Amino acid sequence: ALYITQQLVYFFLKYDFSPSTYQGDFTLFNMVGGGCQILAMMILFPVLRRFMDTIKIFYTCFGMAVTGYILIIIISATGTSSVGWLFIPAAFIMSAVGVLNVIITVFLANTVDYGEFKNSRRDESVIFSMQTFVVKLASGIAGFISSMVLFVFHISSNKEPIAASSRMGLRLSMTIIPIVVLVIGFIVFKKRYILTDRKLAEISKELEKKHQN
Image (cartoon, rainbow, N blue to C red; front, top):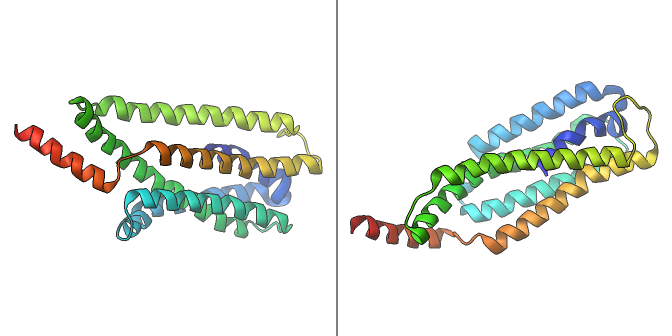
C-alpha cells in the first residue's frame, strides 16, 4: 500500500493537486512523511505500548492509514492546492507505517518462538530473511500496479496537461487501491495470526520447561 502511494504521489502532485509548485511540494511531503515515520518508531510506539497490546496497536495503525487515505480523497475534492493540508494525511499514514515496521519485527520474533514450540527448532535466519524477500516482492508488485495505473490513464512525465478523467483516476488509484490492500492485509492477519500476549506467555512457559529438561 505504501509503495503504491510513494510511486504515484509525484504524478498526483504534478498533474492533480498542485501543478505549479509540485516539485517543492513533493520534497516537503516526503520530508514530513519521513519525519513522522521516524518519530512514530521512536516515540509513538512506546507510548501506545503502555495502553495496548501489540495486536491492538496493529489494528489501530491500520485504521490510521485508512483514515489518512480517506483524508487525501476529501482534501483533494475541496480543490485546494496547498500542500500543507496533505501533511495531515501524511502524518496519519507514515506514523502508522513507522509503528507497523516495529510491530512486524516483534511479530516475526514471536513466530520464531512459536516455531520452536511447534517444531522444536528455531529458524531465525529463514524467517527474517523472508522479511527482506517480502519487502522486495511488495516493491516489485507496487511498481507494476503503479505502471499499469499510469498506462491506463495515459499519464506520462512528459505529457501535460492531462484529461480531467485521468486526474481523477490517478487520485482514486493512489488512495482506493492502498485501502483495498490494507483491508485484505487486515483480514488475512486477523484470521491467521494467533500469537496473542496470552498465547505467547503459554509458549514461553512451555519453552522454559523444555530448556530445563
